[in-house]
Image (cartoon, rainbow, N blue to C red):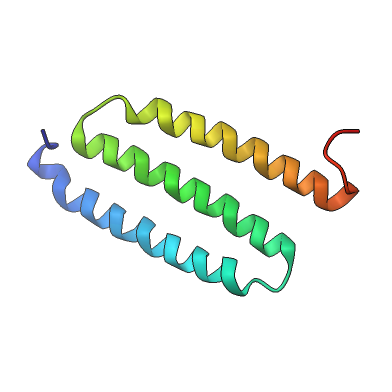
Length: 94
């Protein structure tokens, strides 16, 4: 089952934009001069992945994708905070 015909072109455009964002973020991840740049790139990739999951859910009309996107968002947030804390203090648990 696909979405209405009126959403076909905007969804394709959104998929292309987020895919381009993923490619640009991957480049930043590979050439980032500092570790902070790489952490930010991974966090941005998580956000782009969440957007792609939600767009796929809109395209297919399935509701299962939205809880998966929510779980990825929570996991990405916690992992980013933990890694930044590790970079600043040298340990995650005090």
